[in-house]
Length: 155
Image 1 (cartoon, helix red, strand yellow):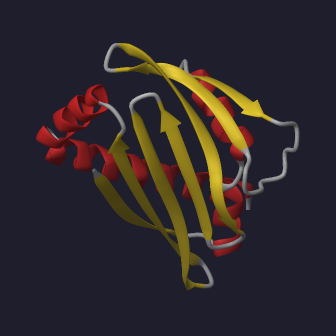
Image 2: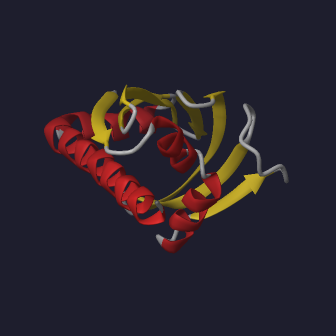
């Protein structure tokens, strides 16, 4: 299953990239939402191979996964890969400067099933594809808006 969305942010590319590569902020945000996040390793600087163990509930069942920074190109790309017991996935966040003060965020997520239970979970998501797509695009838009607001307040 693949999901994709694009949003524009009224902020320079370098500031947007700095905001989306602030992994400590994302860790705190996940913890506030009741998701357990454990960073593997002590180095706080973003680099390929950086990883997290993540635990939380999804669809009424405890889930855990390993999230890894698969690609990292400053100012343009962040790629993450995720491995769970029944699913695996990749996500890619690309930034494109539309002008000196405007940046486009493109987010792509691809999820594959590894087991029968993973196939059942993906099938239920595919049956609700329009709702899942709408929610995904809404979340990306919320993220872009929050990023824009946070950057405008700090300027």
